[in-house]
Image 1 (cartoon, helix red, strand yellow):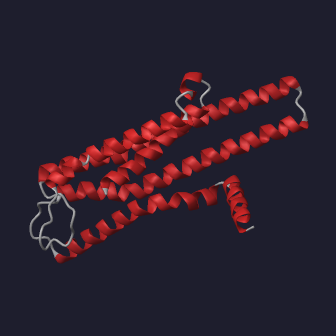
Image 2 (tube, rainbow, N blue to C red):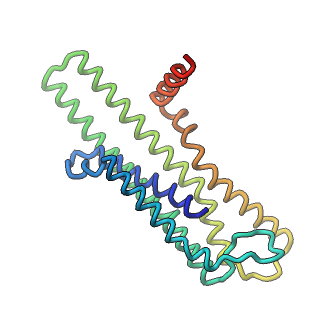
Image 3 (cartoon, one colour):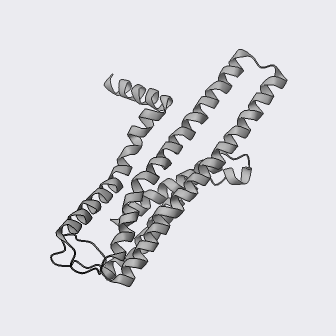
Length: 226
């Protein structure tokens, strides 16, 4: 389960890096934004995240009467698991995503300025100006879609990461009150719900944010109906 969650997070992270490479003016960086390289990276991510969480199999334990399964009760292992999860799932991916977005924004701004300079120098026609406007709109939509996805990712992943750290710290606390156990169970449920929400929100976020995505979706639906 954790392998699939981590694969999803790092696929999005690598997609942000790919978009940055594609938007770069550096030809060497643009070479990395190719299909065959993306396929190799996807295979590499899958292999890595099938191996890295192997410690959860070793230290997995279900404590009778606790009411919550799939919790690491070995204190040292639980603390390691929490730190490992927070770093690889809560710190590195958002940091890389946000950095990539800022770099993409800078690259798009540079491209926009260059296009405007070329238009001013060449006294471009109305058709060229319209083409430039379309490119600018497309760039803005792509950046907005990426930004909103990263923002939602940070919000929905935070509860799960915080609960993971909390569970490791209090895993050996004895004689918890019924109220505390109930709160912990609800917190666990809410954190897991947030984790499951993220993979299914991208489609709806794109519909809300991007006009071009909505237009393309309606076009596909109309074509399918006909």
